[in-house]
Amino acid sequence: MEIFSGLLSGLRSVCGEFADTRRGPVVYSMVDVGMSAFSLFFMQSESFLDYQRQMEVGHSTSNCHTLFGIKQIPTDNHIRTLLDRVSPDALEPCFDQAIEQLRA
Picture 1: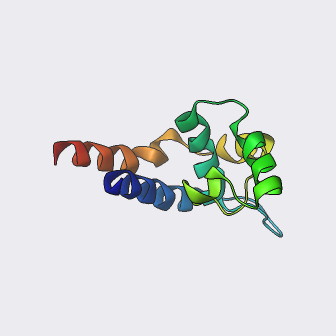
Picture 2: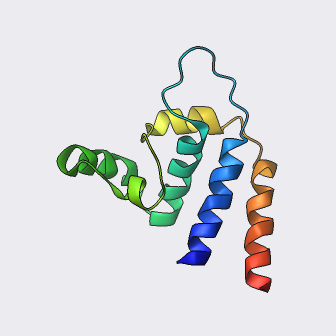
């Protein structure tokens, strides 16, 4: 679990560096947006975020909060709109970190 936590920490750090061109008040941080997108792939469920929102209402928490450290779960449209502008190259540090972990 220590390796997984380290990799998630690196991903959170990279997501925090994503360019954010929004103006005015921001509801969802780029970290939450990036981690939410990752959670979809990790959990392999197209309705994962909706289910997490339902869990949040019913149980006051969700896997998004406990496993991925997401503070506020954005909508699918927010994720697409904000991440469409991010270059895939921005994730290169995460891949480098994963490769280093594998080598170690």
